Length: 222
Ligand SMILES: [Zn+2]
Ligand SMILES: [Zn+2]
Image (tube, rainbow, N blue to C red):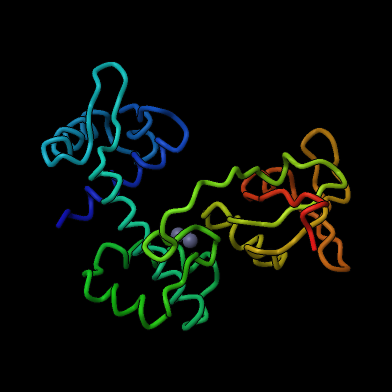
């Protein structure tokens, strides 16, 4: 089993690869607040274990088994989040924080029992897939909330897992699955006013960028 440090590197690399084809050493170093030399050491170790591949002058990629490793780690994290929110009354922020600790100390047997106990949830409380339960599904094209125009309808899918932001959306009572109508949008980075049921909820543009949504087309509703 990998030690704590390595697991965090795998996560940081996977996160960078969401946005770019190669994760650069510098980016990982900045993100983890360590030296480039430390990243390079770790990358070499991970490459020896077959979890990453390194391309000179470009950066790091996850191999097939690296991706599988990362997916299992994410599933552990997300299953713990479901447990903490549904059974222990954690807030969205608290659940993410403590799941980040628990995920490193979760043997497969424990996770299998926990998963069965909770009847195999498909999403974490922030709307991200639990792959072991979700199975393969074609990736939906998701937008961020700020990309929608006035008059459009959408369903909230997932929230970026960042402490203060999670507190914010919990206060606004936003949840994955909610259907919203874009009522108003202020120019120049102002705010977005959402119509939810019979209520208006206003959120800042910066927060809107952290919410993934899927557009609902008028004709497909009913
Ligand atoms: Zn989380
Ligand atoms: Zn989550």
